[in-house]
Amino acid sequence: MAVFGRADNLIDRWRQVARGFEGGIKIGKFSFRGQLAMDQEIADLFKRGLGSEIMDGIATIREFPLGPVDVTDAGAFEVNTLETAVDLDVFCHEWLLNCRNWGGTMSALETAIAGAKARKSRVVMPEMEDDRIAQAAEQLRADGICVPVALGNNTKAYVSALMAARGVKEAVARRMVARPLYRAAAMVAVGEADAMVAGAVASTKKVIEAASIGIGLDDGVTVPSSFFLMRFPSGREVIFADCGLNVDPEAEALAAIAQASERSGRALLGTARVALLSFSTGASGSGASVDKVRAAAEITGFVGPVQGDAALNPTVAEKKGLGAGDANVLVFPSLDAGNIAYKLAQELAGAQALGPILQGFRKPVCDLSRGATVQDIVDATAVTLALA
Image 1: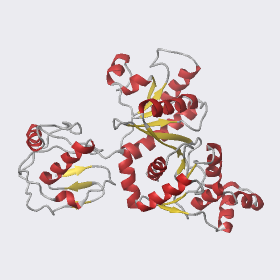
Image 2: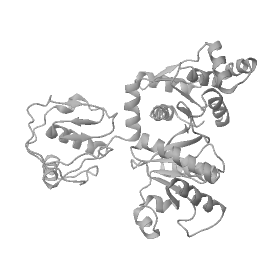
Image 3: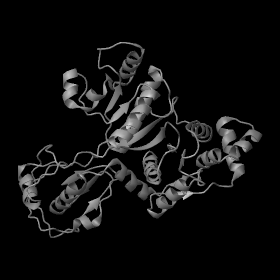
Image 4: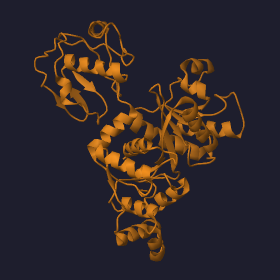
C-alpha cells in the first residue's frame, strides 16, 4: 500500500515496532497533508484499540480494500521522495496514538522544523547584541534547526556583490558593508549564508532596504511583500498577508501579494486556499477599496472580495454565495487592515504570530517583530527556512 504525503515528511524507524493489532484490515489512503482515510472496518478496529474514541484527525476519503497485512516483518520498509510503503497495522496504530496527542498531522511549524533540521541551513543574524537573538541562536544551534553564523569579514567580496547587484560605486558599497544589516545581506548574496533573520532591533524599513540591495528580488517579482504565519490555540494555522510592508497596494500589486502568499501557503501548509478580504462579499458593495479587491480577484482567480466570516466559515460562505469558507491564506486590502488584524488575533485570541516573513526575494529573509520573544525568533527562523 502506498501512503502519500509531503516529500519532506520524516518517518522514524521506531514507528515500525509491532503493537499487536490484527492483520487483514482495510484502509484508505493519506491525503496530501497526511490525513488518514478509512472505511468502517478500520474504524471499528480503531475503536477497539483506542477506547471507542475516533479522533478528529481521521476522515473518510475513499475506500481502498487490501489483503492481509503481515505484521511479523516490521522492518520491511522503504522510502522515496514521493511515496512510502509501510506495514499498515504498525503504522496505523502509531498514527492514531499521535492523533490522540496532537491532532493527527504535523503542524506547519513542526513540518518546517523537521525540514530545517534535515537541511542544516546557515542563517546570519546580524543583531547578536540583542539578548533575545543571542539566546535564540543558541537554541537553534542546540536543537539542530540551523547553523547560525556570525557576521563575516570578507569585505572585498561583499563590496563586489553590492556593486554587481545595484551598480553602486565602490566607496558607497564599502560604507554599506560597514553596517551589520548590509553585511549580512551581502553574506547571503555571496553564498556564506542561506538566509537572513533580522528586525528584532532594526526597523522594517531598514531590513527591507538591506535585503533589496544586498539580496535582491527574485526573477519576475516586482512587488516584495510579507506575511505572518498565525498559529491559534485551537491548532488552526492561517497565513495573514500583507501585514508589514505595502501600505495601500493597487489592484495589480494586491494580486502579486496574493500570488506570492499562495506560494508561501503551499510551501508551509501543503495547500493554499486564498481569500481576498474586503468589507463586502461578491457584488454586494462598491467603493474604491472593494473595487480594488474585486480587480485583484479577477486577475488571480482567487476568491474575493469576501468578508472574513465568509472566508472562514462554510455556513456563512454558503449563505453569501461565494467560496467554500475554508480559506487558510487571508490577503488584506491594506496594511491598516492586515496589521490591525494580526495584532487583534494575538491579543484577543492568543495567537502566535510568526514573522513577518518576507516574500519575493532571491533568498529567504525574515523581518522579525521588535516585540518577538526568544521562542518566536526560533520558530520564525524555522518557518523562513521552509521557503528556501
